[in-house]
Image (cartoon, rainbow, N blue to C red; front, side, top):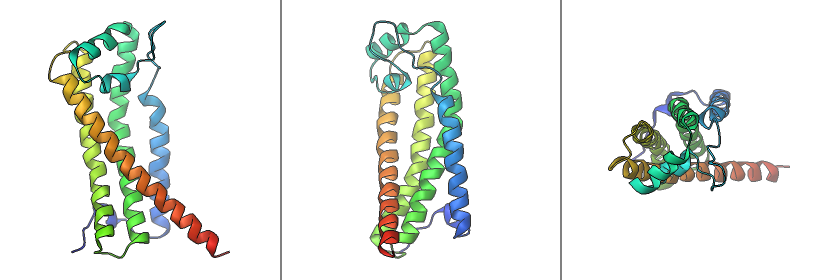
Length: 186
């Protein structure tokens, strides 16, 4: 059985690389918008939006938000707004990288190929987890720092990071294999 991904509809060859390049450019263009400021309280450890994502409970989340000034809370809300665009770009870029790598490295229908295609689908799951996490963070930043929001944000963030890391590692390994194969031809 061979798995399929909607990104297979993109014609192969040069178009794949152009689309991937565009998605990477879009991702790099939106990344700075998602972290407006470092959100560091004076004299304390660096607490940023990722710290809030990983707080995991009401006490830590409340302490992080309480350490921020009103402008920093607004920066965090702005960061979440831009992250809603960023998550579409990064998840599709990584998914496309997984599909391209699967097509180049594995025979269709093999377990390795199917696993790579599942990893591509998982990137969109990561985007959904990211959006759910953003919803929980918004709730907390607007004053609802109570269960279940810190736990939802933590669970979604950890799951998202694992999926995205796995996808990036697979694509990076595929790029290294392609470069080594290219160097062997010289």
